[in-house]
Length: 356
Image (cartoon, rainbow, N blue to C red; front, side):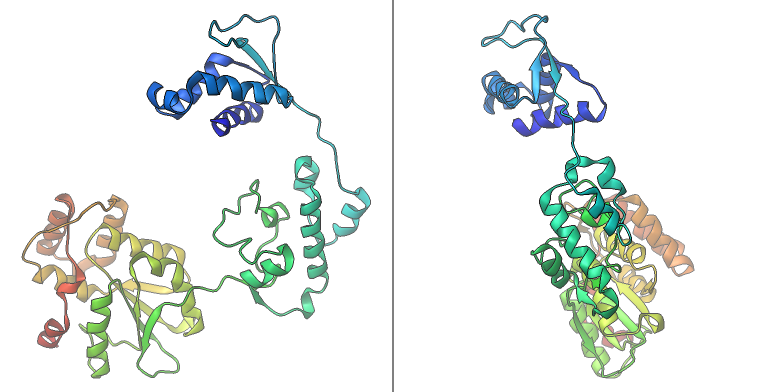
């Protein structure tokens, strides 16, 4: 409950409002708990009263003495005021000026609460690095984080928002390149047919299809009209983050990537986000694979609890273009409208042998 109360107070602070009504705050808490019963199960008014008194004792809020009481037991004044404490600069202005040849301190000048001892220690580390940057080698984000922030996971899997605890790079208007660090993609599972400079790559959403494609490729055959230097097992959504590893095994300027997944909202979404996130790479859908998948499916497969976003379907249809004739378009729409899916595992090794 204390977090919810502080959230309310922060909203008022952000709007430069000093005074609030205790009933408005209590109703905000009730709404946060989605009703009276959950409010009561989390301590109800008794806990609410105690939290208000704690904030009062910490001089974060104060009651307006001329206001009436709320009529409850124990009583609270109806009107309260947020205590705005004047912030003071904690950093040496001469040091700020000295470091300004490499760093932008604008945010810290306007937001004095961020002028903490630990933040300054981080800034000193960053400044020393920047002064010797030309003689330093590139490192992973984890390695540089450990060096500068004493924690290899400082910048990993955390929101790096401007006002967040880990937003120091944004506050200083720096990026990964400034600190010569790189976020390496997690390795994905892949097969290379023995090519030093691969050009044709196919991503498969699922494990079984990856191995069916691999058997055909190992036999030197094309796969539904497409050759493959590299096959990648996407592991569903995981490929969205791990695909950056492609730079370690291929020249991204010289490759064409085909994607083939399930015919369902999740499969379409994976492709949509891959295209969006890796716009510097030539990624397309393996059209022939989807046409074959539509043609051989002769029963309904339930979709399950997948989230459906119409934009993903529209994008897929647009990408298929003329390959998607009226019959297949109607079948695709049927699958989508009835919350169905077509698993790519229908295209197995035996099927691939028949259509070669």
